[in-house]
Length: 159
Image (cartoon, rainbow, N blue to C red; front, side, top):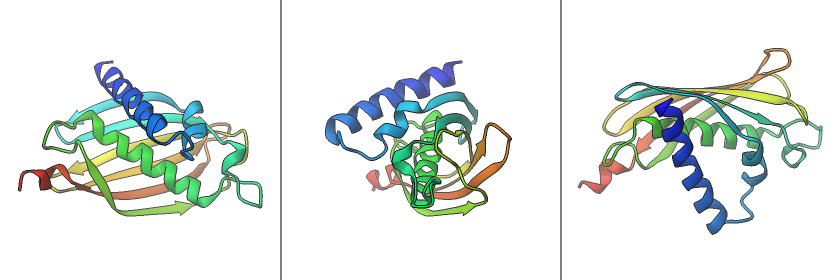
């Protein structure tokens, strides 16, 4: 439970800062339906999270399903937040994306509830890898997956 509370506390601060500095941020509507379901620090440099969110009309493509860029943005945010469970000063408090690869399998339609599962596979001094998966709750179908490579910018601050 401590991991859940630590992550929730961090998210409240991050979302407040985002809303204060960028009230029209495109993830705002999405984040309003976002729920943290699970959070576990599995080692000093690995962790897992699970989330759920509802597909909002604001994120649809002309075909009526969730736009690929929305998938990528949401994978980016949720996998990045999974690092907060083991972050400490000088080690993964700040980081940037090196590579984000998203593979799409099925459409996510408006109103669908999506379960997002994220797992930091490993995080070293400078590089980290986290995977994500979006699963449609009503039938368990995998909607999309991601492989996310991160760069720890905290390491640069010590130079």
